[in-house]
Length: 436
Image (cartoon, rainbow, N blue to C red; front, side):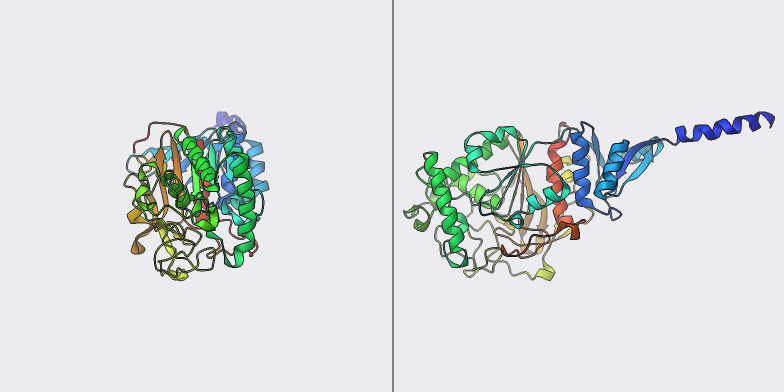
């Protein structure tokens, strides 16, 4: 007892060492105050040349990194919920994740990707692109590039590219009439001047060259996220490389009457056997983003998009994320990390993809099964990866360009926006042989 009396003070001195914080856990379940800024925090850690462990399916896809006072302070500054945990707790979590019987995995994120957003620099409002909104809110740095930078070869400076809701077919999103007439004329003048500068006979030929450069970017190992019409018009442009699908109002001559038979689906990433719309009098209404169709067919460019034929009320418009095996299907598991599995639908120039037009090699990650439509799909091209996500703004059901931008401070836990940010961190993952 006498020896114990003298040893007790030393035991208390050892307690801080034994219980010393080893790591910071960023929970991504319902306890997280700001899911979106949590991705920015993880990106910030990577920018400090430190690693981040992405704990797939553990508490909503949590992040874990070695303890650092600067990191803890950054969590406080950004309003991100965090837990300081000991080595013993880290070992417990790792053991749980490595258990073969549980659907979890640990992926190491090692290097922050170099980020670019493909978006016009003139005539674009902040609310025109949900990805720009969420990157700014999450404080993730990126550059804006457009046709000229890609034509000059600047794309090879980046690891990750997002496509603005662009029209790669050279038809200016078919805005040739109605309330968007002034916008159409302004855009047409700018695009035609750039095409002339780079010696393209038509804007559609310039846009095709840009789309092919983006395709080559993926083939060389780049990561691509396309939303809204940036997805379907991209594939349509690639398929129409050897024909003319553009109406006379856009390029001065009529489309090839045999254009449909000349489409080459071997050139596309995701879609096949679709029918293009070559006329201005399309299957969409006057509402630029998600208006009800008048012809009962498909979207404004083709029948890939189902905007013009779907009859789903907003209160019923949800899509479900697939549950993948984290240990075997690592890539789609990373891309579907979320604290909710049922996601609110939202409309756009391209709202949802007709499942019958999707190639068998494509992974469908989110769908509305009752309507036979896919909302969130993924695939590989060459050494690279791509993701297509239907709709315009996950927190604005039917976006109008005249509305103010979505205030993400009111939606810090948005499950729909989390899917965008999964794609942002995905390229940072340590490359390993995939089991898929």
